[in-house]
Length: 216
Image (cartoon, rainbow, N blue to C red; front, top):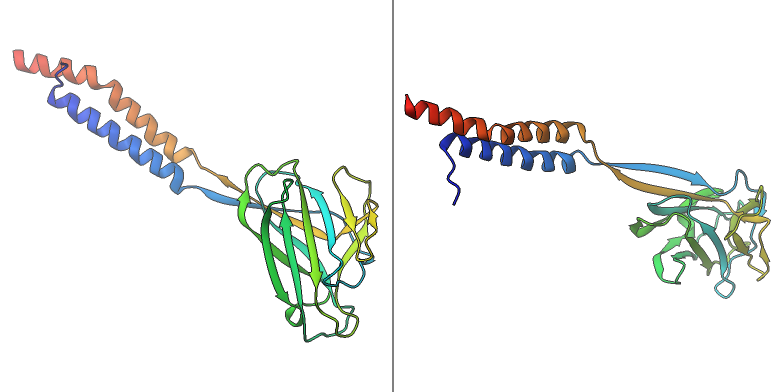
């Protein structure tokens, strides 16, 4: 069994404590980085009146990891409506539902984005195809719709199903994608870890020094 001198115990304890502090500093210094991306640059019209029977669908490919929310531009045809709801939900490539929200249309503004937050951030979302679905039970005035516009160049995985059931790849919903990623600062943690290694490296020296002291 290896016996440690008092000096070695002190060096080992200091090294262990500093390593624990380094780990805590690494995670405590974590920050959430948020980015947004837009599917089209401008909108020209709507997808047609949303109903409960006809489901409007937009498929898209996530541009990066960390998909956290999807924004879609809403429209009430510039007519204030008081009754009804807009329902949005998002599914992953396997058809699993990742988010669903009901919005009172009376509280929504014309030509403004509505946010659908995901239940959890999709860490490996880059390159995967997701589908946004939309329906509404609003029949007041002209009802409600979602804004769409032309796609610059047709993209793989991007297709829009309109309220009349037709499918197009030349237009898309006015969507914004919100991404979240965790970033860690290694400066403080790295400094503490380096000091901890220095204490660990001093353990043989502490043993030799104590031996010389005992002989004296």
